[in-house]
Image (cartoon, rainbow, N blue to C red; front, side):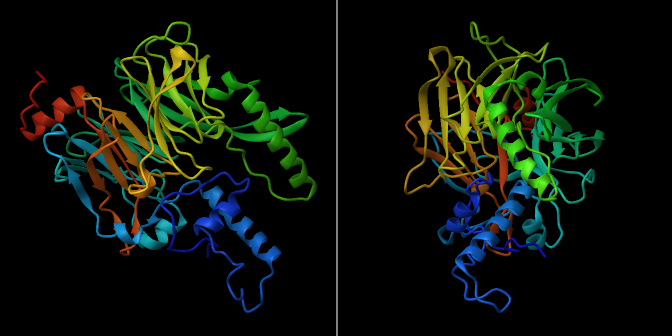
Length: 448
């Protein structure tokens, strides 16, 4: 049985960098604080033994990568679906969301069930349509994200295992088993750009370092890989990468000397697939590929044609970020997880003005905001921002002043105390128009 708590996970977010992680997890209750327990297997526990046990649990947690269900705070247990809706302050909307469910503790709490489904809801939280699939490229993992394309197909990533394309009635159009993960983006030419991963060895300071290289695979409309861009090829020699490799090489030398098993180094951990919407002089062109590099605390833009790194920013300011997207102004909106500092925020930065901070949302004491992993931030047409606080299982819409205008809580609750994380995207453009037609709904009136 796992040394993680089998069911209870006592925060709505978890740090996953192992350096110093055990202390953080002890403080937050994600792992057992054996220093305060009277005994382990009948024997008293010393402070040193407790620390070793905590570090072991921390390493196991890090190896799992993501928490699949989080403990609900007592004051939030009755919250399901829409709990705030300021009519007249928010526009009518349709949104697609999916549960993100896998991991040891999730499987134990869920009794073996795996969620591979997405729901389309309106502002009231009413489910207007659902998609489900039997495609299971990995029997232990659910969907990492689900997106509705402009032509009405739902694409879903079976985390680190495969991707499936479904029609409106959940009929499979195509699927492929592959090491794809996190996110995909729809290009205007009908191709799909999806994040992928491979194992490779690199040499640093004379040490062979096995890494997980991340990249993007360009799929044809029929799901055939046409080309790939690998990020390590573009990042080799980058100071942040060299520093991470140096730490890994030092650790690996000791592990090999001690005869301990060596694991692949998650060096980059890209988690976002998007395209630049407008050119930024001297930095990038419209159509270039935008992503977040979680392990490097950075967001980056890669040339669409050559794959070359055009721009990279965030180290020292962001912590394990997600979901950068470019706005019409040229600015970038970023979900800054704050995994180590233990509070999250959404920021808007101006890359044309030395990455000036233009706007920020941090939440408040009354409405805490912390998603140590996952998370989405979407700027809407009315300048509001839809924020998916994934690990809490909560979505909010805020205005420029930070006022919460709409709030939704994941209805996926296990054993009355564990809420499954979610991701939500409000439909726009052709995808919205397609869904409205299929549902027989009138389009929202244009702004005067």
